[in-house]
Image (cartoon, rainbow over all chains, first blue to last red; front, side, top):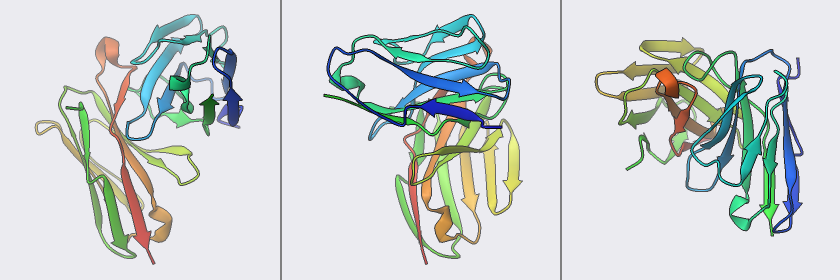
Length: 114
Length: 111
């Protein structure tokens, strides 16, 4: 099993560009989520999904879009990148929600917006 | 005030020392997670607990629901334990899928 796979590992964007961060898991987990990690702040939830076809907003959803068309994949789209979105992004999955089961994290994507 | 507070922010220890990292939270929770973030950035789940105590190797996690407090202990610390340790809470119910994170404790264990 590969676990949670995130791509790319690094990305540099210009302000206004769009891109998609990919996240895939092969553990048949229902729950998937995206977080951003910024210096001096804890991880913050962007969006999450409790199953295929179901998504919901987290703490900092503005400027990001998600969809969950399959159990395995949960891509995060930046619609029009801004310097404030410079961060490290983590995808995570678990069997059920964070209330029920431990999280498995991807290795992260370091995004710089210039 | 953050909903999840960790202390200390930074901790330096000598190899072999007993280490305690604390986590206090201000909301009712259904589960608490301890995570480890390696120097390379990867995050690993160490424990998920909702009551009592759990042990895995040299790591012990405890939680006191009434006092809204959890501790992570490392016995016989080793330089490879150097990492950031993160506490996170889940509130359950309709918010059960949301985690709120502390800022993390940077642990350095010197040989």
